[in-house]
Length: 90
Image 1 (cartoon, rainbow, N blue to C red):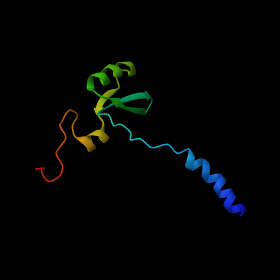
Image 2 (cartoon, rainbow, N blue to C red):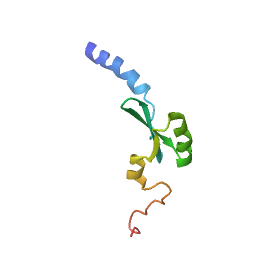
Image 3 (cartoon, one colour):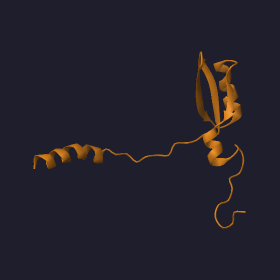
Image 4 (cartoon, helix red, strand yellow):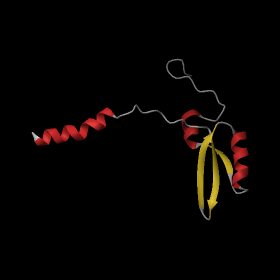
């Protein structure tokens, strides 16, 4: 009886407070920025190359913009139209 009650007390907040999950947006451009000696960070939240290039100025001459590899794997080159899927795909 106590074990069942303890399990219900622990499980109730977990079940009641669960929020629906949302998909993460994958943007096509990343900024590779040098943050210190041998330490780089990928900032992958740019819709266009131009926006990435504007932000690059703030991180110095050693930073550069690249195509987001996750975006490339899923959608192809930025600006490329997605391929058709299904029976009509050729």
